[in-house]
Image (cartoon, rainbow, N blue to C red; front, side, top):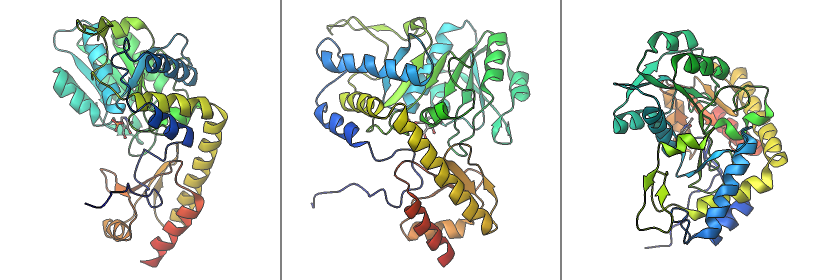
Length: 349
Ligand code: PLP
């Protein structure tokens, strides 16, 4: 078989992953054969993981952060639900999420035998009153999304934190997508803004690290204790991660990306990506399409399914939202010239 090559990014408008920063790519290659799941043996990468958590703490305004580099946002969300279920006392635990929450919460609920209460959104955001209506004595967790997968919107996080506190439940913020953009906005989303207990924030998305590098943060190590099991035959005695052997490449690349880009590089990227998203929104609107966003560098436009299929046939990687709009994610690899070519193709049909 011919040597396979990965896809180019020059027509990818659908992905929340992106070209890793060169420093992240180099670090990933250097640490390919390491396993932070066995920190006694792989000590350097274990120290790098502590550094990764420290940097994620800076980005999310959390002093003394606890956490680790996960396989992705899915694992981080599963761990958040697991903590809520184990930490809060309830006979039949439920977690309340806006319907815009990522499908990883469905996986988490099924695996952990927790009821998932999905609540309709209003204007693409969590409806706090509607969520309050379904909270009860068995609610162990409330989820807020800081950058939804479909529309890039941020939920009212301080209000949801208050709701969680009143309910005696934990508040988890899923900033898997938004976490590396939000520090440069006025939006309240982080640990200092509200009573956030746990958070997902993924270096392998807008953090420009290599896959796999998700991020899980907890306000206190007490929460990680809820996940801890004994590991008798490793040099270390216990483990709170979901997977065992893990990617040292992901950990090292996350540190390299964050040390290189935080904060100025990420700020520049946020500005460039937002400018691109606004530029594209204007082009759609000029052509008579309804546009949702951009609040973060992600927008949706009511382009017909037929046109989306035609664009796909021309090599554009675009996806549809559940309601049928075309969704475009302006990740770092998405440049203005790429968007000009995209708009020219849009006009061609
Ligand atoms: N949370 C949000 C908001 C996401 O957008 C995604 C993925 O797009 C995830 C979680 C899951 O992340 P991963 O695909 O890294 O598991």
